[in-house]
Amino acid sequence: MDRFEDKVVLVTGASSGLGAACARLFAAQGAQVYAVARDDERLAEVATSAAGKVSTHVADLSDHEACAGAVSTCVAELGRLDVLVNNAGRHDFRITTDVTPQQWSRDLAVNLDSVFFTSQAALPHLLETNGNVVNVASVAGVIGEAYSAAYTAAKHGVVGMTKALAVEYARTGVRINCVCPGGMDTPQAHSIDVPDGADWELIMRVAALRGFMSAEQVAQVVAFVASEEASAMHGSILAVDQGHTAG
Image 1 (cartoon, one colour):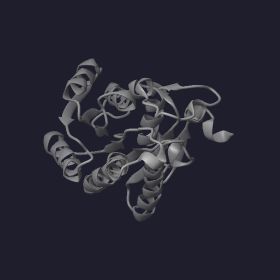
Image 2 (image 1 turned 90 degrees about the vertical axis):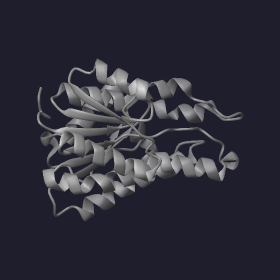
Image 3 (image 1 turned 45 degrees about the vertical axis):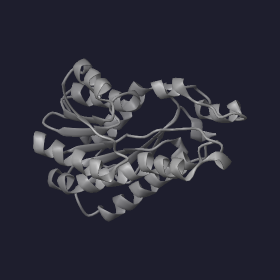
Image 4 (image 1 turned 45 degrees about the horizontal axis):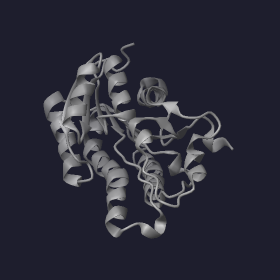
């Protein structure tokens, strides 16, 4: 299926997990993918394993200048931008009373600031192509998660930002939507560092009802939202969570 033929798709956080799954899927569906992440070796593995065209760019998107740089180099190298998938993020569990100002600031920079500044840089190019943005938040963007105050605040911010941008750009050809995944079977899920004294049952509520999803399952939803098949979707906040937020 070549539904993204002749399209350029920038995917952040593309070196593993959902980002890697998105990069491979968009490439397999005809896109020229610009994969951005901090880990150059894992990015290279994603590019070589993809059944399609994947270019890579190493950047730490917690730095706002790196966000603008990733977009500008993408357009300079590939000539255009049609889809931005804001997937970069990290979830660290911390007991609230132990969170330092530095940890709070870092969590918001990775999970919220990166989405804003990459979108800000991308929007002028997306206006030229009538492109779209798919923000990846989390079920933590619509409900609370234990030991995750900063992460939850950031993901709620992504949801609110999506709605605000959707209203601001309602009279243009740009679409802006948000996907909120529940628990996924990704490398990050296998390296959870649980703080001493934390209640494991509260943490594992994210896997309620039907258990964990694969990154590939969620990537299929991201690709659909980014495609012309979802042309009527704008400002949508879509839970992809095996029923977690239903009960």
